[in-house]
Length: 157
Image (cartoon, rainbow, N blue to C red; front, side, top):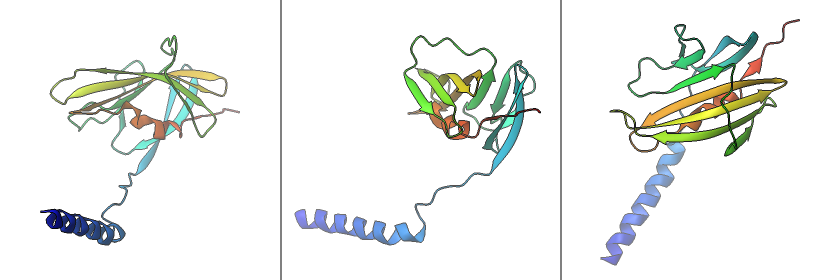
């Protein structure tokens, strides 16, 4: 019995050693599209995956994936939510700072929903940000952080 377990473990280890260099564990690259938008008379750009589209029918700036069954969207507002004590802080590559909290709640047929809500301080501007995700087991509203690194104010001269 023990020799069978050892031989199975050796087979798995050899398989992984052979398959990894062949590219079975490659990152999936997504084409990013640069979007320009305005919040409270300040223009910004952000790069998002190509499947995200801007929803012109809302009063705030919303990017969403309309063809997907589960909810994943990113909102920007002029009025940041009130955070008595943000649980998370992330320094962004462009020099900004994201301060946020996460709420998780039962969702619909797509599973549990989670929401990142907070604000970004960028130069002398503060804007509100909300991102959602839905998943059967472990939603990740922090998916947006890698794209928030690309958020830039447009300076008009």
